[in-house]
Image 1 (cartoon, rainbow, N blue to C red):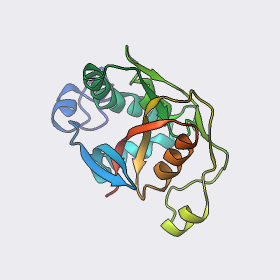
Image 2: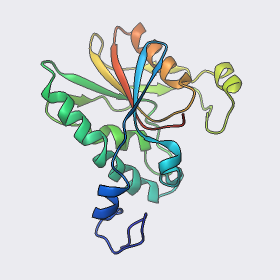
Image 3: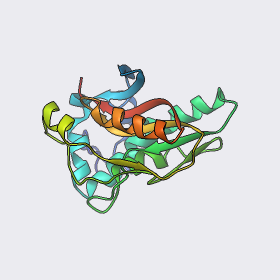
Image 4: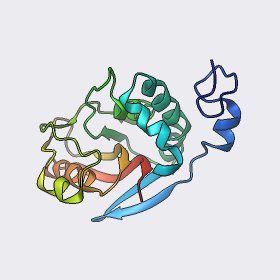
Length: 190
């Protein structure tokens, strides 16, 4: 097989060189209404890889990006935590045969971190991709949380653009007495 980035022969979707040189995360932080959001990449740096989420190839791309970013992050974070941490993905809906957000959260599974798959799901079929801020504000995702209450969670999504989705997700979790520590995203548009 060939590296998706440089086209060199590789056993993985990305060769070792691209993982070390091109795909090393550069974590950035945004604050959205009191919620700290950490992103591993700038959207424009990995846009071609992000757009694979609508294709069968996206399964392999997202899984590998999660191994490079989310997996080492949670392992380091857990070292400094003295209580269990729960991971909640934003709307782990299956599309194109898999859930790209579930691929991210799955890589965070380790001792001390439990993933609550499909616990925060949108009841609306509205899609925000390519939509304006006005559209996003007027069309709620209508999240419902069906997970454990009275816990600390890390909220996970693939991309943050306006922050509307994460704000709504945090609000719904708060109503269920869930403390959102912060959010992690693969990429930020800003």
